[in-house]
Image 1 (cartoon, rainbow, N blue to C red):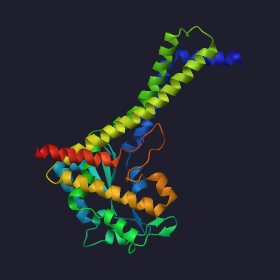
Image 2 (tube, one colour):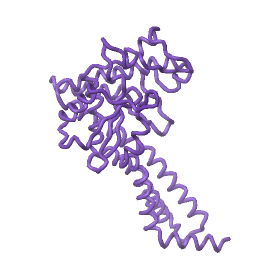
Image 3 (cartoon, rainbow, N blue to C red):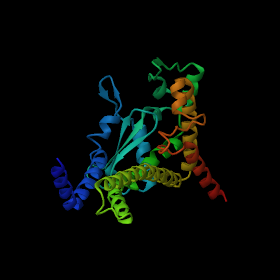
Length: 310
């Protein structure tokens, strides 16, 4: 058994560079599959359905989407396509410069206006096993939070376009393979610093375990840092597109915070575990923020508005 372990160790040592490159490439490819083939994965996951048929995007929202692409200065709009998605705010995936292009999902509530709430009130939303009563006080508050003005809708779509145009999917997918490569670097450095290359196998194993732990922490912190950088930078790009986008951004985050506060009340204990009193999402755990605070994103856009007025 010891002989087999030694052979395995020698094999890994001899081919460690090709194995490392293959492993990092495999992780990157796995993370990018979702974006390289959005039609096969992303769209099927987020497509809205009604009575067994996919919902078609309304002409109104198609027009708004094309206007956002025009304002953003997208050279070839054929690389972007929109579809009707479920949920309450736009989602997006894909890489615009690849053959499959990018997909942006726009939810049904974007069809609604203060005078026409059909995109909201004709939907059944279940919370704790019960349908939300739109005529109740909480239902009215939720309905109000889901109605967005045209500038807010355009900002919400624009921030997704900005993320795709900036290569956000590629940056996010690169974090894991970089940290995986970092584990090997940490392992070599630890063994070099403590002189363990010729030391006992137990100590070398401990160094490898420590390197793995450092790599895991690096991934958690690195993915958060990249995610927050993308969120803030895409907000700034969207807010600076044209007059009205920044104000729309402030409204959009105000409505998200209001919606989350209402859901916190409606969902009871589960809502209190998921949403903070401010309307932000609670962190997934102590080492990972996971979600950029909506209050910070809102204040970032307000700061832009102050700069423009100064």
